Length: 419
Image (cartoon, rainbow, N blue to C red; front, side, top):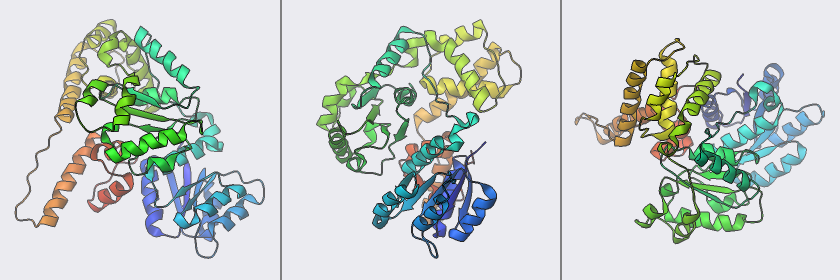
């Protein structure tokens, strides 16, 4: 069952922006503009989490929080929202029962990370059906088992971890495995100064160091030094580039280059094809359990065909294939013809993505503003489709902060599907 979140803020733009964002993440969302409306909604809806602004008319957020927590029987987690001038007040509110705070202007990565942590630590997260299930690295090959052992050993340290491997090799899955015993991780959204994040409140994952400017790389190195010895959390820095590939261009801070020979290599799928039968079974169960797709079985001939197939998109492409094949039919058995047809479809999608090209015709009778709007609508529409309507992936693809993207999609009449 989806968690229910109550957003309490007197600014309509913020209320409804948060409602859109959180609903896209699959949550049920109520909004209230002041204390009396919040109390009425709480009475009838019993939220799992409340996002509460500090400055509001009539009754401010801290006073309202005190009222809720004064009975000693109110256990609904509350996260305070504060502007720059009220951070100290937000921190003080933790003494009255708030479990955390987020600072305005809101960073979507920080907000969503805080929401997930608050729900996981509250009564909602304790329900058996809501306990988080992480995607796991799968395989009994020597290379995968050695990598698992290396990650287990690193769990006891807060030293930074560097990961290198091709697109789709599963760097994020391995990051989840690494952080399994330390509260998960937050994905860096590109908006915040790294130095302001240290000492960290959570592990921070930088998905592609190539996307950082030289200034950001310098800030990252400084933050790593500041964070050493002062936190149980860590930086995890990833890239598709090897050390030799990095040396061939001037996009990298010398400090990053000096660190990169120590990067842990996440192998391409072609390097451990003996794990493919086990991975097929794992992802059949994964999609059957989480997305309620029909369970289907890959026979020995099918497994052999797929072991010898070149997965240009690595694990990502294999997952797309399994999901597509499960959605094809209710029949438990999967024949070779169906596999070949589905592989052609998935490969065409991967090739289109790798090509990274788009053709569009724009009416020359439009003025510049209208032409730009037409291009943005088509560009974002196609990226939205390639992202599977996932806003995190869309933001990564187009290099925009999620807050701006939500507003832009709405202005262009494009909406991500509710998850």
